Image (cartoon, rainbow, N blue to C red; front, side):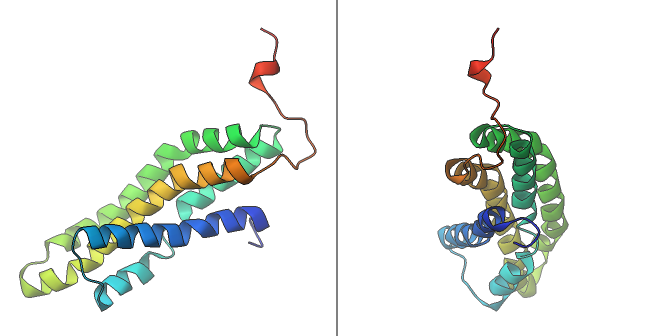
Amino acid sequence: MALLGIRSGLLVGLAIPGAFLTGIFFMYMLGMSINFVAIFGLILSVGLLVDGAIVVVENADRRIAAGQKPSNAYTDAAKRMAWPIITSTGTTMAAFVPLLFWPGMIGQFMGLLPLTIILVLTASLAMALIFVPTIGSATRRNDTGLETVDDESRPC
């Protein structure tokens, strides 16, 4: 919050419990149990799941500071940063995919770790590209003191 500001920090902070709850919901839907391996996967994913939300919020803040309306700024930030966030999250998930193929009884037990991380990272991707821009554009007002750029008011 010290580096992002109060509003942006709270917005990024909403992505953490949102991704956790969504990931746990999908674990429940898949019939996975919550044991110490799954909890370790949740703890391990804490530092990984806020990256996308931070990138979107920072890009939107930069656009708002340049004079763009907050609703357009968050939409444009999510569109512009979608592929970089998808690829960075995908490469992180790809590191855990080989762990899904552990053989034997150990593989059945420890397979919860990569699956938990993959589910939570997928949820954080949805949070960064859908939830954070939606909440940000709904709650942010133009407080920069700059005149907003409105596409409808421009002459043709």
